[in-house]
Image 1 (spheres, rainbow, N blue to C red):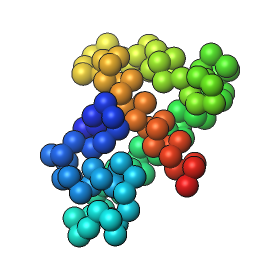
Image 2 (image 1 turned 60 degrees about the horizontal axis):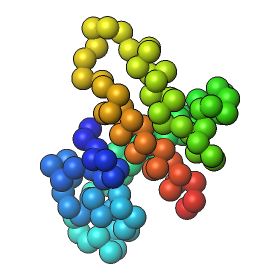
Image 3 (image 1 turned 90 degrees about the vertical axis):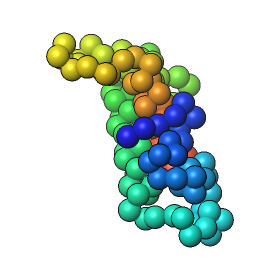
Length: 112
């Protein structure tokens, strides 16, 4: 999966209409380019991963929280420490971006 720094799916995954859905649009305002199986599945994965980040933060104490939200930096530190040496392409910046996107998706889901 490719996610940009702002939490939107890259255009080469699903197209511009799907980016509008991730940005908060709905099916009617986005138009006919919306596909239930594509962007909806990807958004649900992000939301689920965000929920896992929140559960992890809740179980590990206040240093794993940034106010009311999970602390992505602290969670990523634990993830990096757990990755076996032979696994590549899981750098800190990339993980922080993915975890941050997931937390944002989960926070939006909770507000709906």
